[in-house]
Length: 211
Image 1 (cartoon, rainbow, N blue to C red):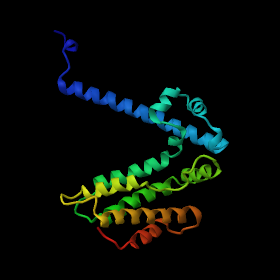
Image 2: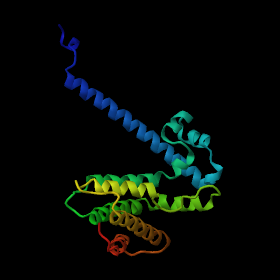
Image 3: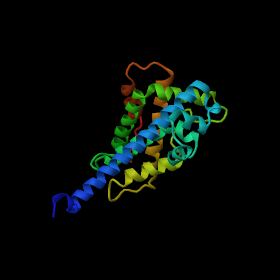
């Protein structure tokens, strides 16, 4: 039988399926990012309140059903930078070594988020302006909801067999760290900081409570 008629081996089939899946995921991510970029251009030009989902779809050249595959509403688009920062924080905690303390793991994760904020200062500045000019949008600063803080405490606790996400010390550490980052964020976006990352370290190091 000719070679090209031979059925592919399980390994080659798996590799091909993985390649197809990767290409699809990449295309979907590009489509998602395209929608975000188009939406932000409109938000800045017209104001959040004067932009509709239909406007975003037209600018991004996607169908409404494609938009809703990624986002439930246009507010989900405007908070995309916040979502990415939260994901960055949780991903770093998941990868952190159980040998370092919870405080150090959280500090390192907050530094990653801080670097992201500085690299995307223009977008995050626009977020503050768009929210300030809107009568409906109230997302003007980086703040974790109580349930998100609980998720972070759970991630930290899971790093060790004896970890306890309900321990008040751990919950207080997470809450204090979140508040410290918010203070830094406000400082960086409302005043000149000669060394923003050093300022973040100073604020985070002021938290003396350890879990």
